[in-house]
Length: 71
Image (cartoon, rainbow, N blue to C red; front, side, top):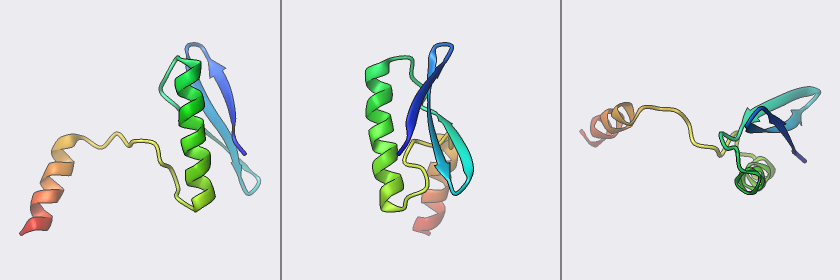
């Protein structure tokens, strides 16, 4: 089970993997959005996915990899 903490105007999800604490920014300042993202994170962790939150991969890299895969 994960928890929510607020640092400044940003909410973070806090959870444990083994004995190690993980803290992931939910990149929102709205409590309602933070709760929804926390639910998504908990569901994903329960299913065994590592992190369901969007990555910061540049769109140009995604498109280039897609085009390379189509060849």
